[in-house]
Length: 107
Image (cartoon, rainbow, N blue to C red; front, side, top):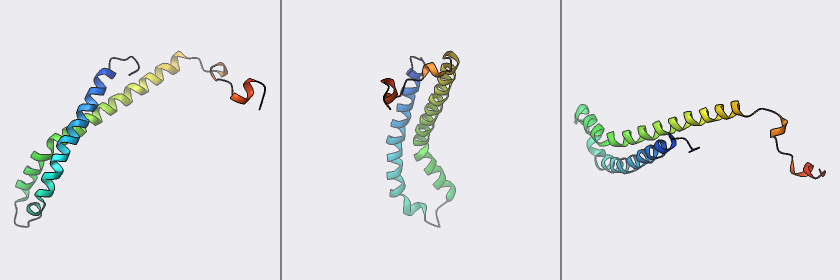
């Protein structure tokens, strides 16, 4: 979390998204296979089927969205931390540690 306050919100948001996706996604998969014959019936109304499909998948989609949001937020804050670290540390050979074989004069 790099001692940043944002990390304390990103982690629970990502976990909440993961839990919602797993719980409601599993429930949706069970519903989908139970209703597969009805969904493929040529006499069924497509608008009614899409409405039912949305009602059963919406919470899983919310979970995926929350997880994606937390992941993108973490990516943005990580890139920000990297930019900040590059500005604060001087670039030069003094920052590079010696190779293991050359430290004692051995190659």
